[in-house]
Image 1 (cartoon, one colour):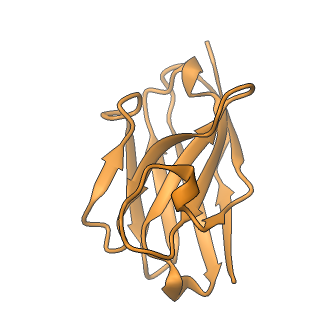
Image 2 (cartoon, rainbow, N blue to C red; image 1 turned 45 degrees about the vertical axis):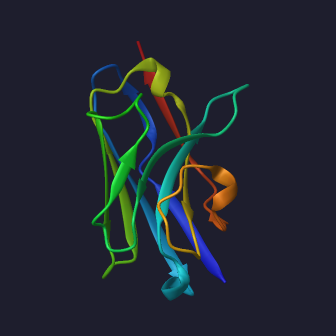
Length: 124
């Protein structure tokens, strides 16, 4: 089995930065692409960013492109999401997710494993 644990969330002000981490444990060799998603109250879970297994390919939601950077350290089995220039509309629970199959997908249903989420709140 695979376990994903997010950390790094918190309460910040508009324009601040946060760096989220996602520690992967268990059968880590089965994981390829890793994604970040978020869910605000009353809204559906939405794609934020994805990184391929080697880290050579990344993709971002238009709403965060240019402000967020996804990266991974496979030696540490950890994926990161650097979030800069945060806005109140970035407020949500952020989840990391892992895929057993290749391909940097952007749909939640394409992911096999999920973390418990970490709250990010951006005040205006």
